[in-house]
Image 1 (cartoon, rainbow, N blue to C red):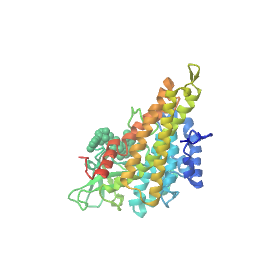
Image 2: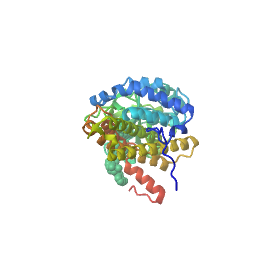
Image 3: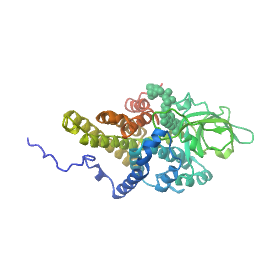
Image 4: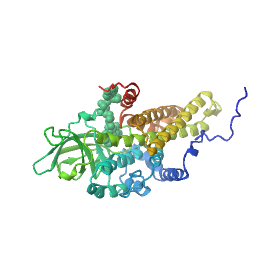
Length: 401
Ligand SMILES: Cc1cc2nc3c(=O)[nH]c(=O)nc-3n(C[C@H](O)[C@H](O)[C@H](O)COP(=O)(O)OP(=O)(O)OC[C@H]3O[C@@H](n4cnc5c(N)ncnc54)[C@H](O)[C@@H]3O)c2cc1C
């Protein structure tokens, strides 16, 4: 049996030619975000990570780029396809998971619920400013004692005789919390009230009396991202602060699905950054009189990384096309989030070993991505929770509790 000839001129960064699966418009958008990341993120992100900061001014830069709430229609949003949003996430996370997290939280977790479930007044008040990056949003679901099981939340919303809402509780691990102008906070209503204890979403201006958002320090992951606690002490809000269009856990979970979709693309960007760094390094680093890329063991690592990045790209694109066609399901989103983040973490760890001692410094992007991906592995549904969603999908048996 004859073998096909070994192709010459293979693109080491896209051996399968996945680029041909994109439209001209998608390639243009992808290249625009790629250039933005090269110009505005990559030169400084190592320092942001070292310093544990994310410059608030980047919000306006993202707004000018058009990526904030980019897949939403109207209210100053770009109204792109879901696939285009995903491609932007890939490029942003090639820079840093912190940059992609900022954009995901703003668009998918803060703007999306206002856009999907908000009143016309809420949309007019917040969305145009958020799309422009003039206003920053955050999403408060997780609590100190309520993580993977958000329905166990203790934050309460009580409506008094005047119709005002009074919120009390604490949220934990909230991205953008300390720099936000507005927080979408999920709280449990009074069991004896008209909502019968259902979880409702509230649009909370962060200058409300009784609201504070102390930053969480000493992180060694996602350092180029602000993570905070939200403290709500008798925060009084008008009756109009509730998101009228949703009641129950469907509200926060539908936002999470939006963000998880973005992560299935974003994680491919982090993996690609690690693979590219390892490939370049292996070509230049000489030991035993030849580039380490010439050793079989190194080639095995590079090929494994390349195959994983390409497979992850195909998976993300498939999900993007399905979302645009309206056929994307929750288990498919879990598949993408779970498998591509796991893939990215494996690629990052392998790339780290190729860089030897240099792999442990932030002079190179690899360990920054590797550490970041530990957060991405946990947030937006941990790897285990997505495994259980998929387990339920294929067996029909619920194993969460
Ligand atoms: C950097 C960062 C940013 C974040 N940003 C936000 C944000 O903006 N807004 C927000 O609301 N939240 C945010 N989070 C919180 C994040 O969503 C939670 O950390 C996540 O849901 C997991 O909750 P937990 O950390 O309390 O872990 P836990 O739920 O306590 O889980 C601990 C471990 O137990 C496992 N586990 C739990 N239940 C089961 C089960 N039934 N079966 C098997 N294993 C199980 C988990 O998978 C995990 O391995 C962020 C987190 C991080 C790290």
